Image (cartoon, rainbow, N blue to C red; front, top):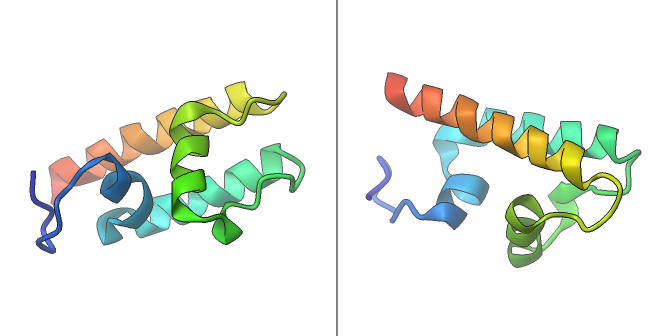
Amino acid sequence: MICMNGDIEDERHFMLTCTAYNELRKELFGQIRVVSGGIWCLNSMQPESLFWLLLGGSKDKYEIKIFELVKNFIRRAHQRRQQL
């Protein structure tokens, strides 16, 4: 698919860079920082590491909570997309 801004809308684009979801993504990153007690500060991570953390898991005691937050982000982003 092609994003509204002309970029290819693949998983990386959707999860990391699509401007349509910036506010949702900012909220997601903040929620992950809170549930992990500040261990996972996603704003400072390299894109490749960030992508794999979001979709591949954190491999620690926060993983299930992070997956739930990511699932919620995907659901909300999908709802937003249907409104565009």
